[in-house]
Length: 271
Image (tube, rainbow, N blue to C red; front, side, top):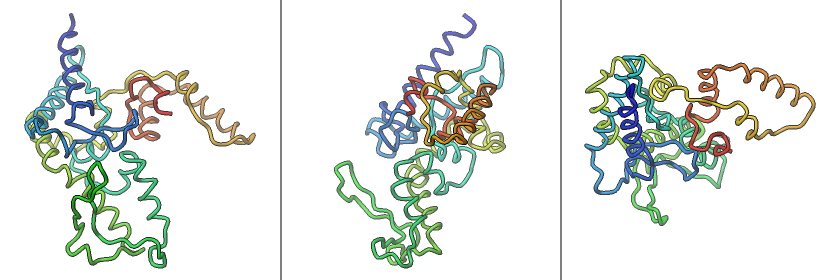
C-alpha cells in the first residue's frame, strides 16, 4: 500500500499526542486556531515519559522524512513558536507571546511596552509572576529575579521584565516537560543537526507545507481600509499571492498567524 498503513498509524498517534483535548499539550486560549504547547497542568495519568515518547515519535518522523519518497512522514501539529525555539536551543523572549498567546500580548505585553512606567500611577509592577488557578484564586507568586518582589519595573527595565516573564511562562514553567521531549527527540536526531534551523524552518521540516487554497484565503480575509490607494495595493497583494508556490504560502502563513499549518476547517476558522 506504499506505506499507507504506516502513515495512518503516525497520523493517529500524533493526533492523540498533540490534540489539546488529550491533555498532554495545551493552548493559551480556546480559539480553534490556537497553537499547542506542553501542558504543565496535565492530568495525573500523563507522565514525563509520555513527553519522551512524543519526542521519539517526532524524531522518527524526521528520520523517515529524511529518507524521502514514500518514507516521508509529516507531523500534523500546530506547535507554539516558543516550543519550537527551545527544541533548537534558542532563548525565549517576550516577542514570542505575540504569536503563542496573542490575547496576553494585546492585553498586557503591548500595554506595558506603550506605557510610561516612570510616571504612571495606575500601573505598579515588580519582578514577580502571579499564578492563578482556573477559578481565579492566587496559587503562588514567583520572583522573576532575586528579590524580585522588591524590585519595581521601570522604563529602563521593562524589556528585562517582559523577557523574564516569557522565560517563566514559556520556558521554566514547562522545563521538565521539554527536557523529557528533547530526551526522546535527541535519542533519534542529534541536537547539533536541529540547531542549524530556525523555528520556522523546523516547523516546515516537521509539518511540511500542506495544501493551501487561494480561493479559500480570498473568501475569508478581512480588510481594514477602503481608500482607492488601499484597494490598489490590495490588488497587487492578491496578484502576488496568486503566483505563490505552496512553500511561499506556508511562509506567508507563518508570518501572519505564527504557524504554517491551517487548523481543521481551513482559512474560515482563523477569522
